[in-house]
Image (cartoon, rainbow over all chains, first blue to last red):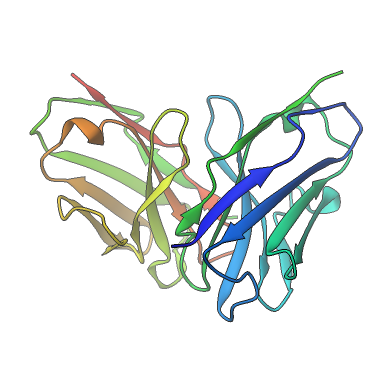
Length: 119
Length: 108
C-alpha cells in the first residue's frame, strides 16, 4: 500500500520560498507509469492543482503558479518536493501531496500540511 | 482552462435518502477523465470515482458516477451516516487539472 507523508515548515515569511517534501513509502517514485503531484486547499475553500512530476522526470505546472513553482524528485530518498517562491499571504493553505498512475486521477494522498504565510 | 461548476452548493438530506450531485464542465472533458472525491473535515480527499463511472478500490457500490461530455453526476443511492461530507469533481484530461467548487451533503 502506497503511503505519502508531507513535511516542512508550517510558517513562512512573505517573499520567502515555501519548501515541502513528500516521502513515499510502499512504492518507488521512479516506477514506470506513475506521477506525483501537489495540490493545495485554501482555508475553507476548494482544491487547486499546483503541478506534477512524472516517473520520467517531466514536470507540468498550473499556469497560474508556473513562474514560482518547482517540483523535483529524489529517487534515492524516495521523495519529491515542492518549492514555491515569493510567497504572499494568499499562499496560506493546506498542501497535499498525492500520486497515481498516468491517465488516472491521484489515488494516493498524504494527510496534508498547513503552511501559513505571515511575518 | 476547463471550469467545473457543481450544484447544488449544499444538499440537506436524511440517512437512507438518495443524493444526486451534479458537475458541469465549461467544455467537453477529454475521454471522460472526470473524477469524484469525498472530503471530510481535516482529512485529505478520498477518490471515489474515476473515468466518470469507475469506482475506486474499496468504494461501496452505493456510490455511482455517470455522464460524459460536459455533464456528470454522482449518485449515492442510500446515504449512510459516514457519507455526510463535501464532494468535489475533478477533470484530469486537460492541463491545468481543475476541481469544482464542491457540494456539501449535510444531515437534514
